[in-house]
Image (cartoon, rainbow, N blue to C red; front, side, top):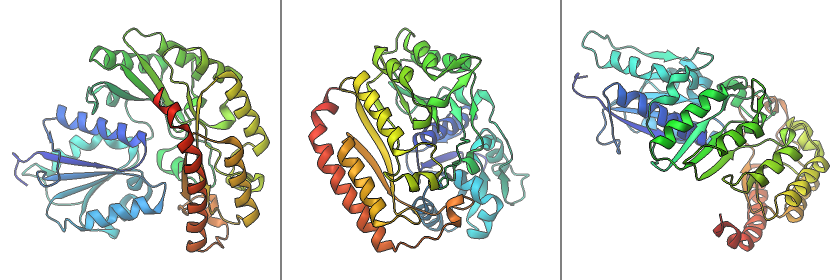
Length: 377
């Protein structure tokens, strides 16, 4: 590859954490002299920043990689990279380098090797770093000049039985609260007025005596900030003080995303969620009493192994009872290394799709009645 060709296209898949990671990669590469392209047609290097939460997301990536047939340098980053490691090269020889989520700071160095005349063609994989350096969050690159995602914690230690995140992003690690505030202040100084705090389990945050509610309070107090949001929360770490903080902070959007996943206690236990349906409903009741008019959204998985018709109906009944403003509803997808992989998955694809459609239609009917609420936010 010629040294003057340094054009990179980044294709992002997955959650808000991946969106932020793609911004980090863009910032690192721009600072190293690379040009970020808006189209793969213009680029010499294509980096797929990937997600492993569902099989469908992985299948899309493999399909796209295969379409290039060796015409460009291809890199696989993110959760798929960490999940497959060097096995990526066995799956598709078009891939030239593999970089895990905690190793993205190494991408400029890797690309410099590929653009060097002294580099002999070979495969590179970097998937061993336990925690990325703090500097990656200060590259100054943001896709939206008015809004910034700010990562406050990395990884997850909940080990929900269906989830691959602890295996690809590692255990829960909290960033220093002072570093988070510095990043936000720099973003505000650049013109950003809206901040979204991110974590796989955002409300479990704790650093040097500063828990999540105290961090929210500190961020809310920053001059120049107009709106504050966060994503995503876990029911086992939600409490009355958390809800009161949502109510009382003037810049904090009155909205809560609190995944339930299932309306059946047996399924919640198999999922290792750490709460019962009754405990979840008590939380919701408290939230709605404290945060009057607050928006409530959730995640639901249908077709989890051993889920019976009765247990699926319990989830539908819960949706009817709670009346979420909106819900992200997914069909169960077996993921490698997870405990749920050991469970017999007796439901057919057709049955999962039938349940998925039924609860989607149910939630759509409820959500349509809440449109005026969203208009106020």
